[in-house]
Image (tube, rainbow over all chains, first blue to last red):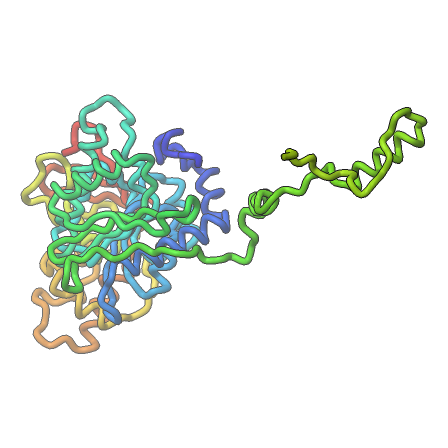
Length: 283
Length: 123
């Protein structure tokens, strides 16, 4: 898996070209949309109540469009000016901010009814300069504390992200807990390499909807997209199943003998009913 | 697209700037009006979150004086429509937002406010 966060900081990686490419890619759009719907599901907002959400790392507004469709009002922050420009072109309805989430938010306490963030947290795990304020733990704790205060009590925040190790997950959850959040990690399709998605599900106060029970991750079969998966591997597997038929069976031996006789080779054994049989140990 | 709904939530987040850092003052603004869908339920739910004096102040800075000094007891449709207009239809496209305490400038260009801080300002 390629990891763009290792290549350059987000505001540089998502320059004009990459921002357009990313947004125009229908596969990205589909993945983003799926994850946004799932994040909204995990957010567990009370139905039929218009909510005001924060989209952290809104980018070009792919997830924002879905929030619009679902009838939520939202504000989005992102650090890449090029992505925000694309968002402006796409005329999303939310308010956009150019902001580095590692520097913290300045929103008044209790501003938002919830927060979602799709594929963002992993960008906070790299230090770009040696200044103490740019170390990942410092940025994460600044981010989580200011986010915690700007969310309503009770409410939830759901982050989808791509951790590259368990240490990263541990770092993120421990800092989030220190900032006052409850909750934890929900993993969808944990056994699948492709469909596996990690969600960080954080609660402010009771988290809304009663118990502080973490929602279950999705499990079982991945949704079939109508394409044949692992076709080649299946083929290989099939040939392994059962006993492999020997190539040098009776027909092969008879054919070879016939060939040798035609070529005039001497001493070719005669064909009989014993041709091609195994020589059993004689007792 | 700074609308007054978000301006009303926005305080300064510079290091050490913790009191009197709200609301940010507008300067040199260019305003655009864009119609949007009227959603009375959302507004009713949002009114308790609003800092009313700050909202009225900001609206007057932008030249809209339709809001009363105090929120009315009765939320009739006319009032909600006015509120809807002020909160969601006035977009600030260009200008500067200034923190009343530390005087940090947040420039707005193309409707997007730049909230980035310099290294020494990060808390």
